[in-house]
Amino acid sequence: MHSSHHDHDDENVYDALSTADDDGRWAFGTGFDAGTAEITAPVPDGVDRDDLAAYCLMLADDALIAAQRLSGWTAKAPELEEEVALANIALDLLGQARVLLSRAGHLGAAEPYRAGPQDDEDVLTYFRDDRGFRNVTLVESELGDFGRTIAWILVLSSWRLALMQRLTASSDPVLAAVAAKAVKELTYHRDYAAQWVLRLGDGTALSHARMQAGLDAVWPFVEELFLPHAVERRLVDAGVAVDPEQLRAEVDAVLEQVLPVATLTRPEKPAVGLVGGRGGRDGVHTEALGGLLALMQSLARAHPGATW
Image (cartoon, rainbow, N blue to C red; front, side, top):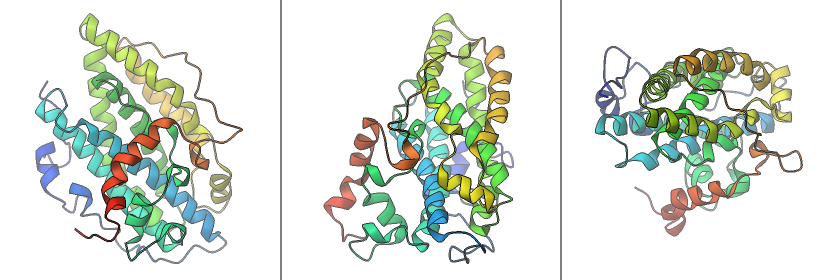
């Protein structure tokens, strides 16, 4: 049970929480260095500025909302080490979100929501309503018990890792830098989740049943991950973005490797449908996002001019 160790330079998850070093770790959402790629780097030639801002928001919101959802495990995880591991995953995602939100803000995405002198990332985090968020539905979905959370992390990290590996070749230097840093972290997230899927799926009858139930609950949100948005299509043609359709085979390969060994069955569950052909990337969300944002944004909205 005590085996969730961070694999970077033989450090464990406790070390990862308290440091932000050259290994690209973002403890407490800080310590991320985009390297030579500044947030203010010029938009690549031939790329629409608004499209790039929208794409940065998509990637940022996936990470931001996932981080907020995972933070709900604080003081509730089954063991202290797992609590720290889940917090570390959330902090890694928060680090990615902060840079991407700043890039989107520099490109003008924060202006419709600005009501004061806040930083762009704060404006975009705390003063958009649910219709302004562009995350996939999976990340806003409830985590449920530990089994469902692990299934959620496995699917999310497998998908985002495949995306970020390809995004390292983006013609936008900020996206490429974020992706290069993210690959190490997402590899850990995926491996951490896979190890727990194996333990629970091939464990006791109860742990197997709860792991299968968790996978079943997450499955309806998987299909949306591979549906390309019009913004993504345009930016793929410009050499900036990744076509999500190209990620399916890699994600399937991960699941096909993990699930049989864990004695789990690949679910056959209907996908969460789009509304009029629109989904999370268009600002159409489930009720779950509203509650999450109320918790995340309440303090900033109650004291909009405060600094801390």
